[in-house]
Length: 355
Image 1 (cartoon, rainbow, N blue to C red):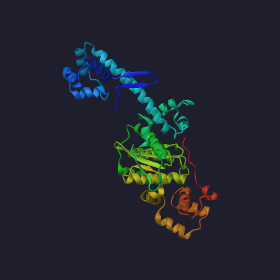
Image 2: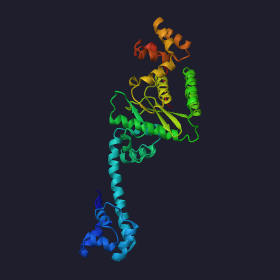
Image 3: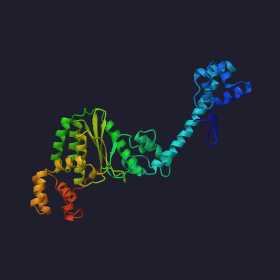
């Protein structure tokens, strides 16, 4: 319920209803009688007196005729009240935004997106981030339903994870929206693009430009972002109008992680499943899609049955299936055939860096 006055800092403004009540008291009549004289309903007068409704131009005109005042007098009262109320609400909202901002590292936006440093000027930092993300309030990022669903399985998601994930999706969405002339999503072409991507795993210096271009041609916009520390996000898919978006980050920057994440999100998109991926272990269908596309199931089964897991054997098998050796290493580690701490094997993994 609104009040018929608002106080903020050293200022106070009264709703027109406050003054209307004074007139009614001075006249010594009831609200019902005043409503009849004014040509409106008792209910309208009641909500005005409580400050629950803005004064209309029509009522302002009737008040001016009845009380010998100007229309402008009443409208100015409403304007002054509204202005101070907005100012107070803005500060209240800024205070709520601080709770969200506390889990964000402002330096992330400075380093990667050119926002000004503004040391110790928290309110200004909040405003800059809000404007950059193109939202009315940072509090919108507390909601799990803001843009995409959260594919978390049994993984516990904390509020700070939701905030960071939503922010990354928002950044990616804003970037994807810049591609206004991108073609409409074509699923058949997308499936062909997936096959094309398989030919690029060994081309470490040029693969990203090539796959980005191929996906664009079929209406899928690939956005690669620096990870927000603590996001726990692996990737995301989203439908934007008649186009699709795939977001990835560098939380895990080994080549095997990159390709597995990319094909995992491909799997979701093929199945029309849009959302944020947190924990691959609980997303069996997309996991299997990525595994089977990157390494043929039958060939992998024969390899683990008949080979010793040496560096040379891994490289030989990878060459036989035209895959980056790091992808084979990652799969063997995931399936517990070799250790994640195997130094020689880990040397087969390329490191990808977002510039």
